[in-house]
Image (cartoon, rainbow, N blue to C red; front, top):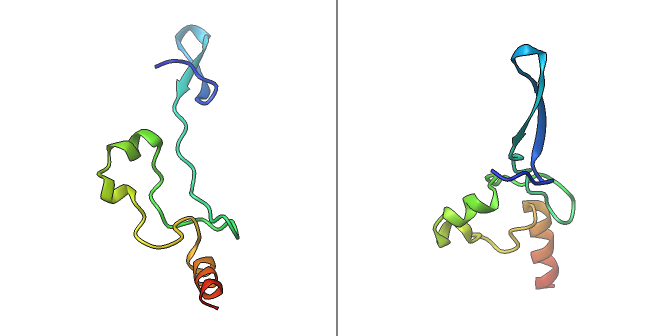
Length: 81
C-alpha cells in the first residue's frame, strides 16, 4: 500500500515504547442530498467497490438519484407545472 495524503494515519504504541504510524484507508462517507444536505439511504461504497458491481447495480433506479425523496418530489412537481 502506498502512502497518500488521502489515507488516515494512526499512531500506535509498539513494543519497547516506540510509537509507530499505521496507515489505513479512509471509510467512505454518507451520500448527501444536493439541495437540503440530508443523508441518503444508500450503501456507502468506495470507487473500487463500485467498479466491482454489475452495471445494473451501479445505475440509479429512480429519477434525480442525487436528491432525497422530499426534494425529488418538489423537483418533479416543478417540472410538471
